[in-house]
Image (cartoon, rainbow, N blue to C red):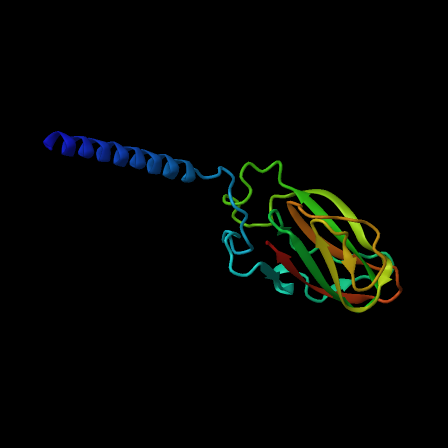
Length: 196
């Protein structure tokens, strides 16, 4: 009888040892983290996980509140650069007092060793890759308009003729407006960036 209990005890010990090793292995494998740093928002906070999938940029955040839209061949100043590395969609809300075109500026971050966590001012340190007219010259009517850019669908706009398909992902973007009309105006914009 004592031999039988000893065998049961040894078998139980081996089973527990095996289960403990499996749990340790599973814990070690699942505890590995990525070496890639997470994207950060305009306040330097990690983007994921986030309870609200949208990050809203105000005219103050974009530095694009009632900016001058020069007459004839003038262009507004560009909005502040917005990091969009993990974004799945964005909507640019623009309100100009004159018909205008909208240009998107696309940036790269290849020359920055660790652009997000060590970048003291998100949106700076990016290199301009190219500028693309989203809405052609003077085809966007005056007043509030929206331009949607996503990962899979071509851009859409509530007004104007779309000239180019720009899709996400992009490292960072900014926007600016221009017109060919004879009357000076102003433009104000907001941006909604979606992350999931």
